[in-house]
Image (cartoon, rainbow over all chains, first blue to last red; front, side, top):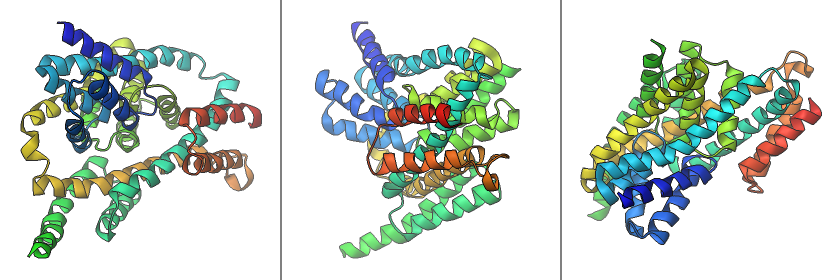
Length: 186
Length: 179
């Protein structure tokens, strides 16, 4: 019981203090569960991060679920997920009321006009930052371009794009990259 | 049954959004659009609020959309819906992870999905640009104040590595001053 409570508090703290979503949470999670609490080892956390990015869903939720499953099974996973999610849930719940109330307010509208422009810049910056690690060769670049064209011009559903991307990846990876690696070894 | 619809929509979002954060935006937008839950402006405001408050964008959007559509319980079922797929998938995978992560099929899948994620984030930028850049009063129909804020912001993130919260704050103040 004591460990569950500690898990909850730790992940509540992580959820409450990381701005900017999933990726920003990873260093904090690492610091708390490896350095402070010694719940899991440094090399294990690398696997956790790789896995969290490989499955669908919010990265922070994936990471906390995975870590706490390792520490104390399904109960731990449920408790930590709750801890991670609860702060944003409560904050947004209290902000939502305010936002809806001031929706027509002139000053708030003006502020949001400026903020919306900034959001565009932030997202564009994310494209470049994430692109560096995901688009490594002309094949991945081709996948990204084709996918973007279909999403934008033909209104392709994002889920369909992800499924096709996965299929194309399996074929390309196993036909070209893996074979090439094997030849390189011989 | 609005609760069921919210739950189902956000379950779908949780199940199919790879890469987290901004990559989730086109999917969330698609669901919101098909049910008329929020206007484009409202949705971009939520993205802004998510950036300025702690927590993942997906959770924040789920909570807000749910609250606006159907009050507290709407927020509750939406947030539950977006978390549940990860919880189930991760719990299953946690048992078989060592075999799983190096399998060529899995590696290939991720090799192909990652660039798609980038195209989704770019699509999110285009979506926000559509709601931001054009206005009926502006010169040539372009909202030049937004263009300037966005360009300076982009420079601020990429070159000077300024914190997003600081940038959002500055953008809010500029909005009040210049609009």
